[in-house]
Amino acid sequence: MVSPDRAPAKLEGKYAAMVVCWLLGNGCLFSWNSMLTIEDYYVYLFPRYHPSRVLTLVYQPFALGTLAILAYHEAKINTRRRNIFGYTLFFLSTLLVLVLDLATSGKGGLVTFIGIFAISGAFGVADAHVQGGMVGDLSFMGPELIQSFLAGLAASGALTSALRLITKAAFENSRDGLRKGAIIFFTISTLFELLCVLLYAYFFPKLPIVKYYRAKAASEGSKTVSADLAAGGIQTLLKEQDEEQFQRLSNKQLLFQNIDYALDMFLIYVLTLSIFPGFLSEDTGSHSLGTWYALVLIAMYNVCDLIGRYIPLIKFLKLESRKGLMVATLSRFLLIPAFYFTAKYGDQGWMIMLTSFLGLTNGYLTVCVLTSAPRGYKGPEQNALGNLLVLFLLGGIFAGVTLDWLWLIGKGW
Image (cartoon, rainbow, N blue to C red; front, side):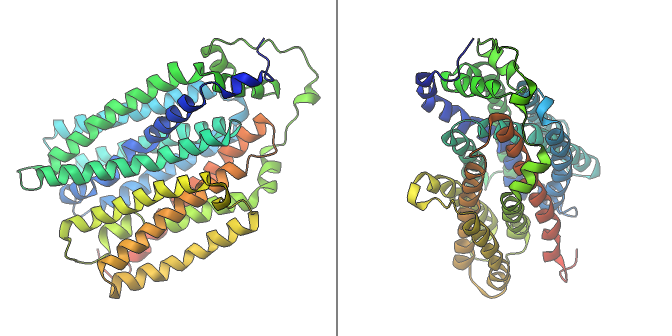
């Protein structure tokens, strides 16, 4: 039997766990961000189908619907199988994007677009398994682990943006330059997703700090960690105990107690996705940066999103007040008129500044909410609350990408 009170184990492997969480966070969105970042390639292939908007809109119902089901049954789901399935689906779907492009020789058309359309839905299903599963799993561990995972999510966007700028510079003047860059993107993404499958399946569960927190969660009645404990070489031999000891708050009770946090997550991503990436890709006008303009905007958003997720590590800069978080979240909606008038009358410098602020606040508030909300609950409740908050996050993304179409009013198709 592993005692969850074995304090030294809590400290062992902490930094290794943080690095692995960062890589797993990367893997959660690396493939999808690759698809978003090469939007100029898909706009070239499918000029009539608004790919930067349509693919995002397809992705979200699959992610939201799947996570709603998983969150409802969270207490009975084997977390290990859930996350391994998600990362494996990311790997296979990314490989299919590469195969589809090679099979069609980089030609557009409706059939190819339907194939990309279907793969986008698969990415959504994978995201629901991994993002909800990992945030739930890490919610009952130290806040530094969930912060590393969330930073990894943002880093995937920053890395794909940097890679996209490099490939564009390398292939801009070559024949089929856009396609060559896209192939490199998805080759790297495929290999990286395979790495994430191996890291989660074989390395992560064996880290002492991870074993400690999972054993602690098991002692508090969690039924989702047994397979992960076994993979880490631990058999929990918990004594027969009264069921009342393991009673936990229901999802409904957790939601009512944390409705402000849930609304924060929803509103943060409604605002962000109503602007990024659709508006930034198609509605910012013509500027001196030319075809680089949208890529620079997306890169600045991603880099600042990553920076924002590290700011809460400085204690006096971390916003923990529930009222403060709500006020900050609502204040961001002033960015909508700011973007509208900047796109209409401002120059590219102002737009880059606004986009940077959008990313900075998105990352900062996300980490503040997801690290503050689980405090004070038992392991099973923290897992459930993590899933619920990610469900509202994805709900906000879905609402945001739907509202993003409103920018097209009066512009024609």
